[in-house]
Amino acid sequence: MPPTTPLRKTLVAVTAASALLGAAAVPAAASAPTAGTGHVTFGYGDSARLGYQKSVTVRVLKGVFERGDTEVVDRYVRPDYIQHNPLAPDGAETLKNLGVAVHQQFPDAEYDVKRVISEGDLVLVHSNVVMTPGTRGTAVFDIFRFQGGKIAEHWDVGQEVPATTANGNDMFSTESWPRTEQPGPRWLTAYNKKLVTKAFDQLLVQKDMSAIDRYWGPEYHQHNPNIADGVEGVKSGLGGYFAAFPQLKVTPKRVIAEGDLVAVHSHYVNAPGERGQAIVDLFRVRGGKIVEHWDVIQDVPATSANDNGMF
Image: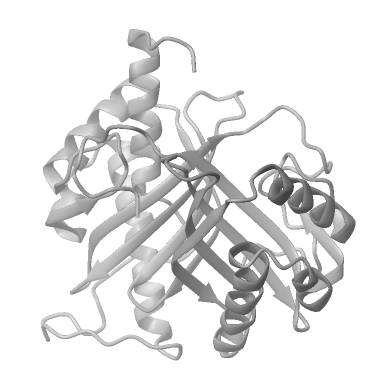
């Protein structure tokens, strides 16, 4: 990494801010369906609650980082907001201050959200964050935990978007049919979550390459910029990865699913003693097979502005 300059410090802080909150093409939030009850329940069928969580995520992002509006933080973010982004301290006040600073320095910043899913009390947002128009920007996955109708906790990973990819696909597009960024029907959530959890454990945790033949579809689309497209691409890419790092340890931390989209947030450690990488893998399942994959990879730093760790 090049030496940190004052400009780079600002950009790093802005990248952290961009990863604090994502956006979704869903209606603006009103009030929680069970506001005032003090008790919230979640489930696959709770469409209103899941939609509300997506809407709150949109409203806070747009208000804070596009308009410098801090009132939305007071309304939708808990004062004791827990932060896992290593560049940002805890607390809603930090979020407000950071949002104002970002808006002032980058008034034309755009949050191009590609897809948003929600399950239980969690929301996952996949975005292309572009602080300066005309640049490629950053690929970001954000995860938010809601409590009592407000944002209570946040994890993220961010990666610079490269100029080219090994597979010809960018880091955001949908190539599998139908080409929509919206998650499929929620009645598929439980089945697809179970399938991806098994596939991920067999392939990434146990390093059993036979999982690819069992769980991956023949028309598989890859968005990791360093891996070739198709089933043969993932076999070659992961086979080489496992050979290079025989002591690789992958520890899943949380799985979030909605419809045909399933995300796994994990800690990858290539060799004992290393800090490793925080990675979000997002899979699309169609017809009982994994047909598409996006990911974002970030090194775990030596120090953090908070005491919570990235996981």
